[in-house]
Amino acid sequence: MKKRIMRWAFILIILIVIADQWSKEIVRVWLEGGAQSLTSFLNFVTAWNPGVAFSFFDEGGTQGKWMLIIVSLAVCLILLRWLNRADNWLTGIGIGLIVGGALGNVIDRFRFSAVFDFIDFYIGEYHWPAFNLADSAITIGVACLILDGLFPKDKGAKKGRG
Image 1: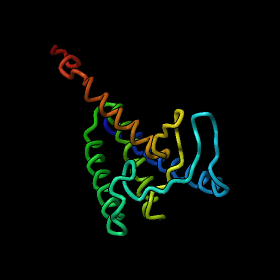
Image 2 (image 1 turned 45 degrees about the horizontal axis):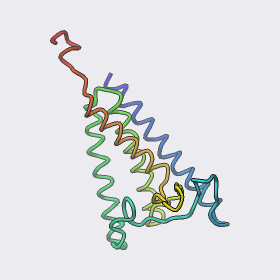
Image 3 (image 1 turned 60 degrees about the horizontal axis):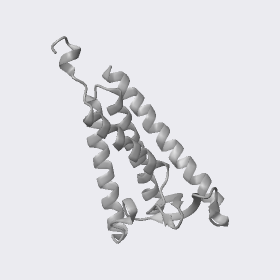
Image 4 (image 1 turned 45 degrees about the vertical axis):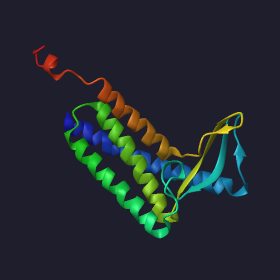
């Protein structure tokens, strides 16, 4: 079971990285002509984020870029170690989504020294900070891990000790 979870998590990581990089490249080229309004609550915009979530820690320059890359890769390694012990699908999916999203953003930091964000969700005048597919994967992955932690399976009941 653990090997299947790990195998599918790695497939998910690869798919997220590919989809993230592909979507960023397509939208980045498309937006060379300017922002695109898609609906009454969604735009595609060009936003470069040199920091972390919501542009926190964006003053670090080159040193900050490398620090964020190192921290991101360290978190990925810790999560992959956790994945090696994962014994349920929700944990495997959550870790796969987080690692795939983190690696997608690390690739941007290597290529551009910033992460390309383009999804601008808003309600009226309130705009959520721009984000991308990698950010969405990380958010959903964290939600999976939280749900897994809130509703753990009773291992004793499965073994007849209940």
